[in-house]
Amino acid sequence: MAKRRGCDIVRAMNLGRYVRCVIFLGAIFTAMLAGAADMDFAPLFSRDTDVFGRSRWRALGPFLEWNQASSGQVFWAAHPLYSSLDDPGSKRHEANMLWPIWSDKRIDNQSMWQFMVLLYWNNYDMTDPDGRYRLALFPVYFQGRGFDGKPYLAVVPIGGVIRDFLGWDETWFVLFPLMMYNRTNEAETRSWLWPIVSYTWGGGHDRFRVFPVYGITRFRMDYEKRFILWPFWSSAKYGYPKSSGSGYILFPLVGHLKLTDQETWMFVPPLTRFSKGEKKSEVNCPWPLFQWSSGEVNRLYFWPLWGRKSMAGNDSAFVLWPLYRQAWRYGPLEQRARIMLMPILYYTSEHKPSREAPGQWDMVSRTLKVWPLFSSQSGPDRFHLNVLSLFPFMDYDYIERNYAALWTLYSHSSCGSLKEDELLWGLFRWRRAEAGQMDLSVFPLFSVDRAADGAGGSWSLLKGLVGYERAGTKKTIRLLYFLKF
Image (tube, rainbow, N blue to C red; front, side, top):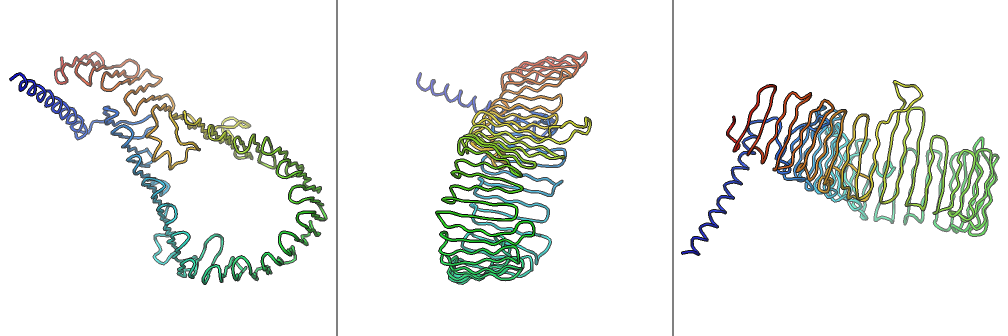
């Protein structure tokens, strides 16, 4: 009897848990159906407006997410399986499923999808049923319609025609590499046993090659280049109006180039090179370990230990390449900077001339990532921080949309006077503004809400088991969720 009573007590306790769970979930979905403006049962479910003005709801911690910006842009995701982004302003749609396994993109009238990187479809104009398109299983199968409206089909290595591919307007082949034809603008090339025998003509080009035995290339009157038993002997003649002359390379012994504006000597090419000219002087000795140049390009490399280079509008430097690299691009309308310490630190910034203060520069955007600790994005009056940041490279959009939510344990966001901190996908949330407005919650233990300028406020224990609310001079006490005094 005692044992049976014990079992009955256990069953009753389990039944009580199920009932409480059903009541709790029922309360959530009842509030959802009632259309409550804001709801906070995070990380199970929450609905609100974030500090950037986006309407959003989230459910099941990091797994379900939806938000809509005031511009009409809509994003939703079931991490890490699927994500979708619709931006009517730019007529853009993107969707990914277990990226990079499958992705779909539409921009204006162009539609494209990709499966496992190698299988892809691209319809360049969905409004034109006879327009350009391509279907490919790289590098085996190609089908589509080119700029000229002509269809094409190719199966590698059997044969076929491909248009508008790899910089060529048209390519056809038979039993590749046995026979192939390429056309780019007016230049046409026929190849046999590619790349051994080829002949090019049209558009000022005249080229013949039996690789590596002999080859000659002419382009109008600009230059003529030859090789014999490449790479052992090669020569060139240049006829440019401001830079004409000739040169040769006897590999691996010596090379010499004499132009009207420059002279170059090479010993054990390409290891050593000495050039002196009107626009640039250069020393590589031995290349690539030591590189120096001055003039249009100022460069000093002790590769891979240290190096810097500057030219019009661009500066760059490295330390222990490729571990640390930095680059700057500047002009009258923008300044950009990029710093990488692989795989730990990534930094970018963009500045534009200030409209309010001539001669000054305003920050347009800034990103900083310290792997695997955090990543941040800044803009005018905006800031967002994620902790952790486990992807060991820069924060590409695909990674952010599909995977970043899974490892973002803490986030901080600010826009103007609004600030928000979240821990464990909303389990802890703290939002505040300069006017004194504040919202603090630790689910499901307690929550505190204070209106702007002290106009009212509330607090609650266990989502309403005990609560207090003040709105102006009116005060309300809540007990056992439903009783109000």
